[in-house]
Length: 344
Image (cartoon, rainbow, N blue to C red; front, top):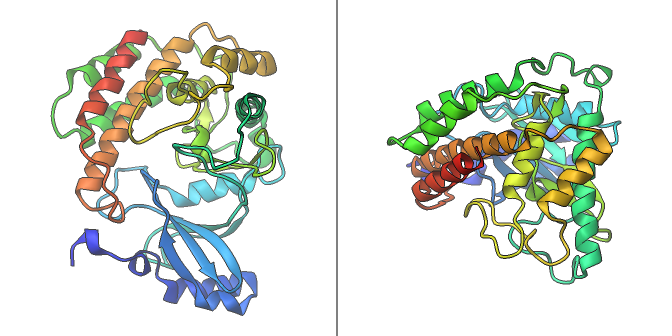
């Protein structure tokens, strides 16, 4: 059997997971758990778990060989639990396992009600320009809330090395590129070189999400300006919060602009959404941050995403993404890196 034909049951092991959920929840109905892969995940694999007791969500790494330090499920579970009593909305962690349960790290969290929006708004949702503006401003305000949390107060003082963040990030993602590149791309190499030479002075140290964008939050179904949960904490750490803002701006499209990648189709080009400048000004107003070097952070976001796209391409070709196929991403890697160079 090849990896591309591995079933959801083989990846999640309901025969083991069911009894564990029964023990954790005290509800015998979880013994009848079923799993279905949720499409859209480009790194870790996400499954909807259903039973007569209701629904929950499981996260686990992809199959195949994994890059060092990547796909740490226990780290994702830890930060979501730590943020449970803060203004940052997260999904409640039901269980987290180091690998004994299904043969690899995983965690199960509650299913938070609401909309996860990727390439289109749900019918009848956020139809007015006022609602879309509220969605955008609520979204940036939650990023500011993440950066306002005191890591020590929530037990995350050891969650990462706060100082020297951008230097380490450029070095780390350069190393990831060297491990995942299947052919030379001069633009990616040049972008890495220029970023290494232009590391901004770090103004603050906060919790950094690492991949904050619209499709990584759950939007309230009744109030588009309200976020019910922030998801996908795989890349979170302690560090420079402006790296999060730069990543957000990379994905935030304005009217007439194409999506940055086929991997991340968006909706922010629709009438009513705030512009990138408006989001930046709102963030600076709320946090007091100096955005003088924002182009460098946004260029870094381009570099990081080029490396991520390359990794997705490699894993998909190897059949490690639960049968998902994202096509040939070589042109997108080149285009993203070139746009990052233009910013510098």
